[in-house]
Length: 404
Image (cartoon, rainbow, N blue to C red; front, side, top):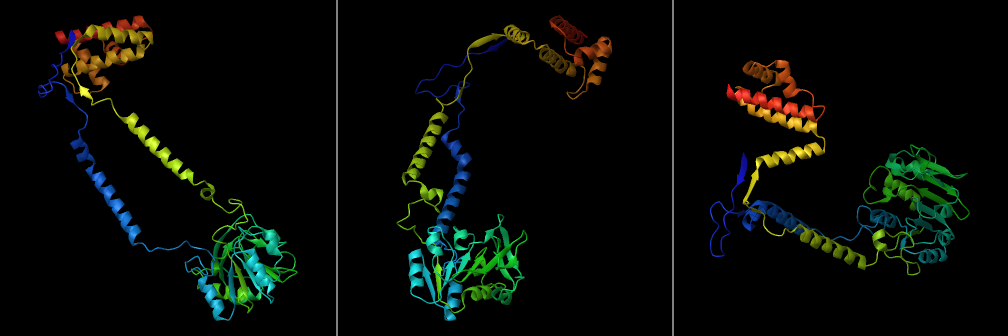
């Protein structure tokens, strides 16, 4: 018995078409690739078009500057600044310690409102006389508000009752407070208590005036100012008739400070050429992927002019099983092949169970059903001799069925 694979047809010349039954390329053609992927390309083009249109029609807005008295975004405080000015309070917006010091040097009782100290020297800032309102857990808080202790856990910002006797908070009532919680020093007052301990607003007298610290400035923003008693609390804390020096974070770090000293993000600290390096790396990876992904040519299904003897195949596989001592795998292959060939001859369907196969085979050959069941569904052979005996018995059963 042998398996014959007929030789392939001779390759056609450049002018001749492919011979019938000859080698045919199985790789996808340009037309078939386009047919399969045109829907994806169309959807991608639609997404790109929608994104471009969205960018073109979107209004141009500058970056939001939280708690900036000149910012009209939801995070800014333009509304509060205008309320203060309508009440006759002078609001001076400054972005440097020197400007704040110059305001204080002009004389008069001023309130210093501190919203950010990222680029400021807190020691110099602490020497400015007068009352202070500090928003959030800023850098150098221990220097600007000595004795105030910060709780490690942040508090959820929500509407809270003051639960204190501080006039500014008691008259305002509930306010949108949260952020950091603090413990007031001796002689101070804490308002708007936090769940985990401490208060989100503390106020205490110091040598130069009154220092007030709030855990979060959300109640001062354009978004939340109309809610609860936020506007009343902000006006009570700031709008007492004194001029206000509103210190904000500068748009650019001062020239005297080294870039990246503090307050800058990782992307701001990167050199400008890093972006191009990343782009070149992406291009290199894409080119390498295309180079490695290309095949040497179209896959061709070709019928080789080779005659393979079936006995050689059986002998080679048997040697592999023997070298690996895979007696169970060899026995399973023998049994599966025997059952597949005998089932239709016994008039059974392919889904017949072991009991049906054994009963039909025993009735057909007259063999003992226990012996037939052990041969077809029993334990794997213990040694090579048992495997040879099993193969012989299966062959004997199959020949008996064929002869009957």
